[in-house]
Image (cartoon, rainbow, N blue to C red):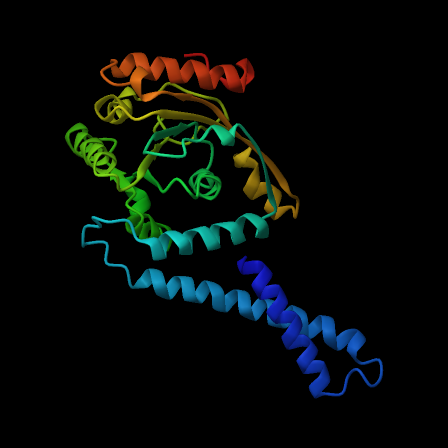
Length: 277
């Protein structure tokens, strides 16, 4: 939507520029039109991201965010879509029709690259996802501000007591029907593109709330940056593997839930993408 608007407005500006200088009378428009279009397109793109920066600079992360912000969630959706198109990521999806249409859920996925949350937000944009993320991400320019406004919860992976507080906060968010929670149960980006051992504590969110667990896998996102630098598109696969019903989750030990979800992901990814641990 954003890039389409920028493109159409740039075309109008370029045409007006050529009309203003009578370029269409002769052949000057042959170079003037594409040059003015390119200049307008780049200028509007810079303005669009300057607007994003200004909106995020207004966010006070010292103030707890108790409600989801529709404005910042919409802002995130518009800019994520634009970035996906700019870096030429082609996402091939499978099984998304199984996404629960009513009620909250816990979404779990393997984690390969920093772009994974953005892709999940884009393809589950109607599900109002709030991510559990490492506390260091709160300091990221723009990203940290938007995460704060859409109720993402920061977790201290080195402090068990603080991590438990984050889990309890996520349980509260689901019980109060404020958002669905998304988490990468490995706890970090995989360095070898393979699925690794889970931290079962995050499954307490589903265990205590009785919400379904939406099991996803993602492939090839680590190739996005090197391909972008080589001016190549990147094909990414996003699969919704299964939805474990809430009645099969409530009260079940977290280790058992963790093992079940890990098996589902491993079966979908295949043995070549599962680490031997």
